[in-house]
Length: 224
Image 1 (cartoon, helix red, strand yellow):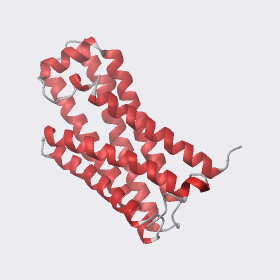
Image 2: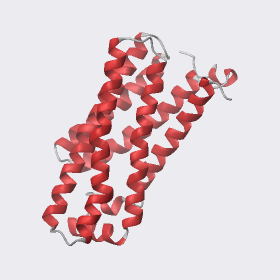
Image 3: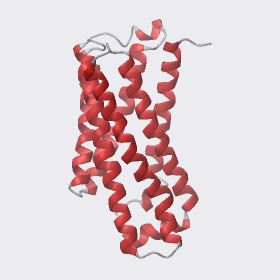
Image 4: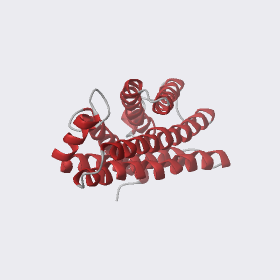
């Protein structure tokens, strides 16, 4: 049986691969169904014609949400147990509920409403609710909790300064995404989604190699 360090190392790679796949799907096959550079009628037509792809893609995002919580749990397990660590992880956990509800709306409820011939106003209302549940509330809680864990990790000198700054930047961009959703600025939301995902997934890998890689590899990552 592999030890816990190896399991964490492998798990982080799986999480990063899942989130990366979700991002590729959102920027590629799913894009025509998202409110970016298109009309509501075009989105409805795309979802109606590609329901299987649309639903499967959102299920990858559901797995990504759970993967993010696992990542934060692994990060928390590397910290000295304290009330602030528990609160930060709890904030991340609170984000899962609204995020998964939103993804269920996107994956199953909106396609069903379209298939039943519901009005465009109804579909648009569901889109608006789902985008705020996932992009504002869920994402905001994830990033607040993750930011808290990262600050604690820095105080406990779990990783070098450059790794801390990388993580700090990725969580900050994630919070900017939530602000963009609240302001209904989808162009900015697209930019912050792309930048925060690139930085956060790469930071997860950096953390994996700093903490859990085989000794020969880890030494290359822990320099200040």
